[in-house]
Length: 210
Image (tube, rainbow, N blue to C red):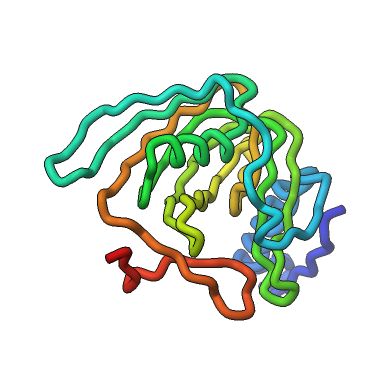
């Protein structure tokens, strides 16, 4: 149900018209509300440990595109129908023994779950969108957590068949029918440390394995 907008009228003689600025605001707000309708039907709150990858990615394939003299490498990682995105990324990072990386990609998915960190609850508000969507942008990084395990952090912007868009912290998505990712790995380790009172870890550029 759309909100009701009250327009201010200006006396211009015998004809009364709404001011242009208020009409513009009303139309923009109505359009925004329409774009938000029916996006996300399942909502839950998760702690950071509950956001780990789940699923399988048996069809994911990768290859090295180029390698630079000091150890930086560039890969392509391709997922096909049924591969879970975060699982595929986590598997790739472990297999290649990645200490630090950045990645981006495009494609299409279904059964996606995106999240927003609620600072009051100190949990992630996760919204599941079952429908088929286009991956308009997928970006993220990989760093070693305090247990020296590679941890993937990804955000995504997704688009529906009606040209609506939504996005957030990507928790889960099933490839449908394909997803193409380009990954750059670095020879220098990116390390994370726990954030006091927050329940998660973040990259600290001052930390070193040496």
